[in-house]
Image (cartoon, rainbow, N blue to C red; front, side, top):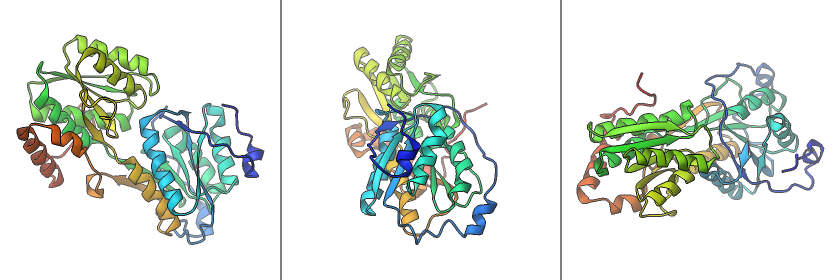
Length: 349
């Protein structure tokens, strides 16, 4: 993918739609506070003058990642509703990150979505230079007090917990597995929820968890899945973005069950992917964009989860469960909703 020249982007000429998907390379939990110059410009939450006809999402790996597809679907939904053009821009080399985000800001895109932690750093650095542009950080726990920066996170541990219960009640070998892409806090919330759910569902079921070390290597994902299956796991859940597609393929080859993540992945093979732990990223990115156009943008961290109305599983999977397991899922869901079950978001020490 040729580097997009800043001058072309700044002049908003000859834009090509650069589709793609990405993944976090580093994880951080905070950013330097700032924004004094912006504060003088007024409250960034008041976006009544939002006249931009373009919104953009910047990503750092190529197309094909299920999570990024969900995120961009929300951006497109928002853009269509508010008469904007939606663009997705690949910044595939770290040297391009600042250039691409700045180019979109100079071209007048608003809001600008950046995904994962590396791009969050860029947004923190550039936001003071563009006080009238709202930056939306997606799927990171990095935050600041900048008045034109919002962080949105969809918590996955509750849906992963229910997936763990379903796995524990379904396994015949008493061995299940979880495969993540990277050892990062955002990914470990999937793992923490799943492992806790397995333990809740049946303390005698063993769960082995490993990391691929990549978000976009399906071959390595498949190899690791086969190793775990060879050790006795008859259900494998992935939280591995595009690499997770390799996990599902390995399960198909080995004839064992798989649990998908982020979106309903039963469309790949309903006989193999019998359950999916959902993460309503589309709803989160849409809502964040809408807040800009409605003049309701609020900086800081916004968490989406069960309390926000997010679905934790798909009815198509639920309807295929045995009646007794449906009742178990109903009970677990109610207990999570009432806080009787406190689903961990961090791994046990």
